[in-house]
Image (tube, rainbow, N blue to C red):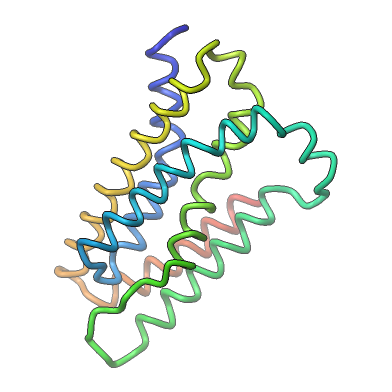
Length: 176
């Protein structure tokens, strides 16, 4: 087992969570929402590689819709939601719905599922890999959300609008 390789993979898997957390954090999340969303992302990044390892080949035969299309739909949904929120006049901090947090966690952990398909080629200890993936992605999400909140204080609704547009563009690019 090469722990450095596992860590590099964990950081790579966490980069999309970080970038999306940075964009999503601009909607003035509360500390509780930041913590909850980071934990949700961490949980997804723990279980998705395990599910990928256990049922990856079976699922790809059953589902004929690619992960890219699912990611595009989720990114566009979150992006449109952010754009709509940026257009509202109300400055009150919006409570994030748990369904939005679950969709966010799923969107940024799809790649962990595909890594899980080949996780046995990385290490014999898939639980250790999943733990490292989980902790790394939760931390990256937490930092991204905090930085996004700081951006919101600096540039407000413009950052939310740009974050929403960025998510839609990322979704489109991801599917190309």
